[in-house]
Image (cartoon, rainbow, N blue to C red; front, side, top):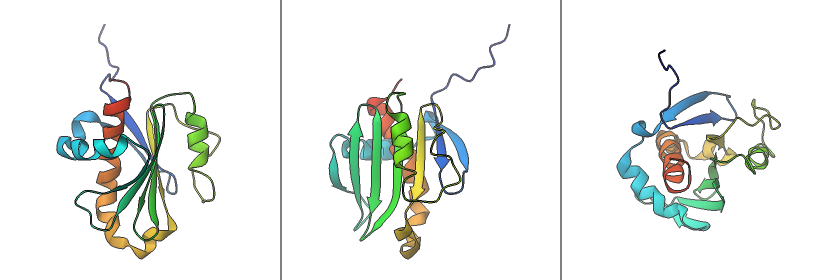
Length: 150
């Protein structure tokens, strides 16, 4: 019998406002970017983003759950990453608060997942849209590499 189950490590990425989803694999992450981002995830609080002037990352961690927001003078984008079942539903609910989404707050996907919520402040900083998608991808893998399942 042929095994047709894809056993590669992967993360389901979900854009909350559009509902777009895609699955990423560890092999598609940029190893250098993951290495640069990993130290930002070792403690809660505010961290300057390397190589991105005047941008910071606000990090909150709990077990294998991560909530992170990229800031300029206003919040630009929030990411929630889960690689555990316990607490994932609460984290999913948190990223749905106070924003319109096409995804459902009461239907979290099974972990691992990375949910992206674009903040209203991003409208005033269109230049940040260029790098945020890659940032999200690599940030999620930096988190799972350091805290998630192997």
